[in-house]
Image 1 (cartoon, helix red, strand yellow):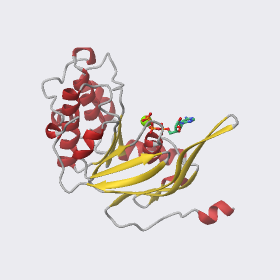
Image 2 (cartoon, rainbow, N blue to C red):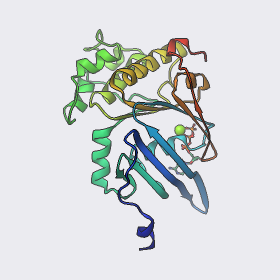
Image 3 (tube, rainbow, N blue to C red):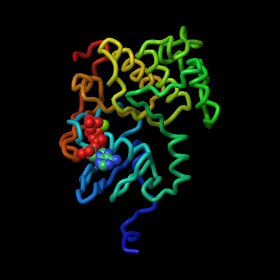
Image 4 (cartoon, protein in one colour):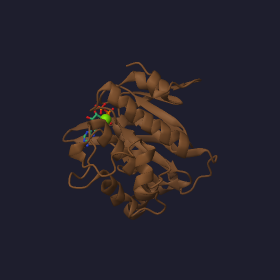
Length: 248
Ligand SMILES: Nc1ncnc2c1ncn2[C@@H]1O[C@H](COP(=O)(O)OP(=O)(O)OP(=O)(O)O)[C@@H](O)[C@H]1O
Ligand SMILES: [Mg+2]
């Protein structure tokens, strides 16, 4: 009952705020030891922005991103996606939120080997509410000449761009990327970042990228720096570099 008292059901937020994170913590109980992955994190993300999350290993970046995407829930505090309070959503509501509103991209592409690029993307568009065509999504990431290739017939960078096409084909409002260039060399990584920047520019998809590479921060509108489960600093970039201009 006491908990309920503190739980806001709805919240009126400025229309440009897409995520409102209010004093969240995440504690993992490992036997006798408590791991505090997030310690009272506050954050707003704005519609259409491109943010980069930077911080040492174990600083809580993935935990925060997974909570934003409804893959995990905080131990305390609240997360709003627009006016919706994700922290008191049912499992079914969270599933719908993930399916309709969020595109995920991880370090490993998780493509189905026996399906072509087009078919891998089609798996998602078939169940989406307002999808683009697989071909359109693949064109947007520069793969119009790889539609009928199987994953084994593509480079790592091309496979990651298929994964991006798959994530954007359902027209999600947000794209959450956990080390999308982690397995790629820097030239290939730049092509993947170029695809993400293009999606952000052309579709206005709010995009958050976790990276270990501080060089990537120069292409972001804002850089969120984390350490030991806290946001230590948020940097606003007056001018952004294109991926081709990045140094890493
Ligand atoms: N499922 C889990 N069970 C227990 N502890 C966890 C779990 N997931 C994460 N942690 C711990 O929470 C802390 C934050 O982890 P998280 O994965 O968010 O860090 P990260 O910043 O993404 O690190 P990396 O850059 O290495 O991916 C770490 O100390 C980690 O060991
Ligand atoms: Mg991580």
